[in-house]
Image (cartoon, rainbow, N blue to C red; front, side):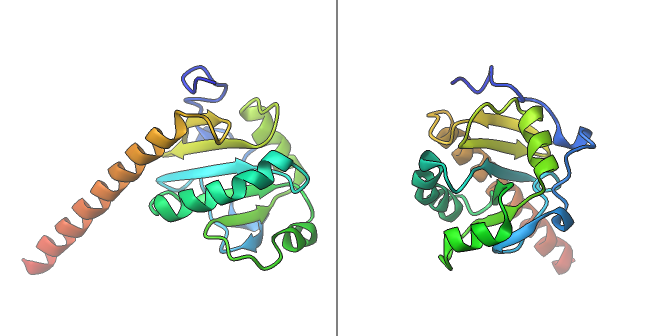
Length: 167
């Protein structure tokens, strides 16, 4: 699927008042929940524990989380928190996993016209720059580019802070 034609590309989640990933709506299963809409850049993966392709993608997402450290990942599922905890069984995952209310799942799915799972959305400054299958060949180059851009911005901020401190 071409990301340039995918539903949801260019849509700003910051403009959608029905979708809020405020940490108060998340039940954290792994790591601390965060608000991907407020983040500079983030990956949101919609998954279910009964989905075979979703399960097979967990190592890929773990690799992304370790490789692209500037881009946090939030895996979301409308399933019961206890079911998700049992599914992950204490496995240390580098990304955040949260149970979310069904209404939020439905709003997110509608906004991006998600027809199936697994489905991954990459946000940059709250705007979707990718919406599609996590194995889409366009995803990896995009993540490399965004990670490099975020790394450069981070270094620039550190340099500016160092110069200001020295003055």
